[in-house]
Image 1 (spheres, rainbow, N blue to C red):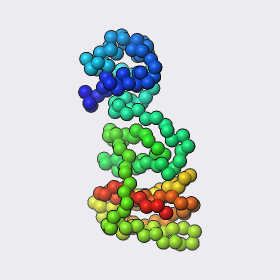
Image 2: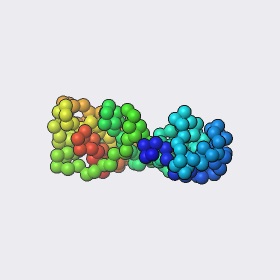
Image 3: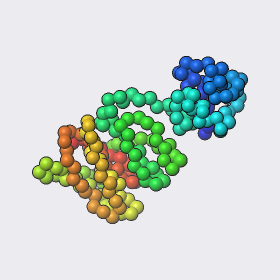
Image 4: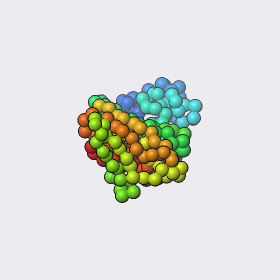
Length: 194
């Protein structure tokens, strides 16, 4: 039951939407008894109904399947609230300006939690005219490397992709204070304030 839509999720979303079992049933073309069975864990919706059920409940299929509806509480689009997601299968890097549900290669990705850099990921920041030269004290091998550097301020993000066997360095144009992120493919996301 945990790997599929739960009756608790359907009931919660239906009640939040302010509709009855009969109204939900009518929207997706089933009987109200069917909806009642789903909500009391005596049955499951047919796979062909998932898309219309999600639409009727006002959520995405991913939100319905995970049981975690996402609401946009970040209406100001403050870049400082940025979240990064990295797919463990293909390495895709995804950025959002707040909470969201991200899926890649069939996996729902959690947002990365940023930590302070440790002694194996020292970040060296040098002033160079109107830029900052960033170097990460880290070997860059095919198996262990810094994947990206990002500088995030209130109104913009500078994202620099790094590659294995390259140099772990870049330049950024620091227009205002913000956070510098680095992502190590083995140790995760790290952040320092600039």
